[in-house]
Length: 171
View (tube, rainbow, N blue to C red):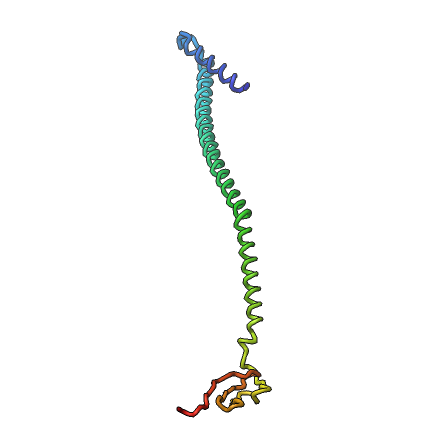
């Protein structure tokens, strides 16, 4: 503040000297030299002040731009926080639920495979049948009255009915 008041005082003094109707011959050379020096200093100070004012305006523009950028950054960060909250609240919960459903389906499929394995593996062994005979042997059995003949195949410990023949004479 002291520098500014000194500057104002110097400007006022310069103005008074310029405004005072004094002839050049009445002012001695030292005084004229001092007035020129003060005038030069005032000119330099004006130039510095204009440069400082330009710098201040440039800084104000940069501050305004930084303010706009910070607002955009704040809005973007808030949107990102909202998206992350949505992901945490819904998407992750949905993924967990889907994961549980997949696990349940896989368990059900594993149980089904375990239950059906004997059916799928049927025929991979060579067990004999008690009633029919040896493995992969066909046996024909006649009914007690002789009218029917049943054919069976022994396969993997099970008797498979191949067909029934009717033994009646043509009429």
